[in-house]
Image 1 (cartoon, rainbow, N blue to C red):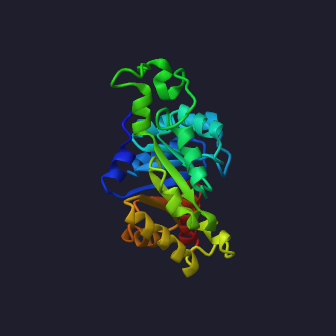
Image 2: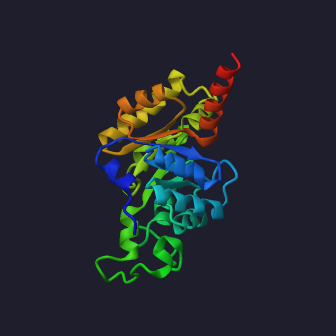
Image 3: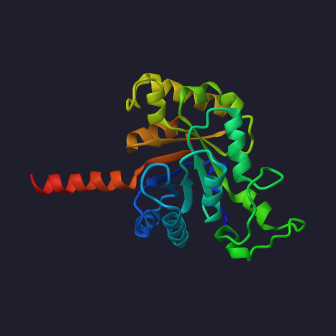
Length: 259
């Protein structure tokens, strides 16, 4: 079982950074690893990434020592299970708006006694049955997996904001991830992520999470915004997307060459 360095870093109170991925070529996640990002979020909610492609991206992440997280498209047991079975060290689930939804996420991502994750030891996450399966022993697949898996719940709508204190009652949620774009849409101002109405709701979550010693994450598009939220206590910073990073740098180079 591989040690989850991202989870360790977050629980040590450190800030971690990483981009979202939509490109299926493993070279991209290798580049982000060599660039010293802490994690990469393999995006299976938006974009073309399949389970097979995600598995190869995870292999590439392990080679360069960057923590692979998968964002699934919905809070469904089978989608969470497949992402974890192929070796994701973190699971990120959108639209967690209630305590019940948070509990469902935990049940799908943790083995008993902490959850009800489906059991199969002939999968990649168990080294294809190499890892000890005897739950009577101190070190076993189920215990180690529960300890190492990072669970990230998206709070990205008014319902989730209003229920944040109830959601935080589910102890096994590791990171409360604020989705600013979906939150802006929930407020009727889609895309206006720097609007005070969005920022005030984000700060409300941060304040309540801080009072309960919970880790908060969010998405940012630029360095200035990343530093702003980091200074407000956000520890898990998802910085942009591979395609956006490629586009912005390409645009900058092409514009300068054509001046």
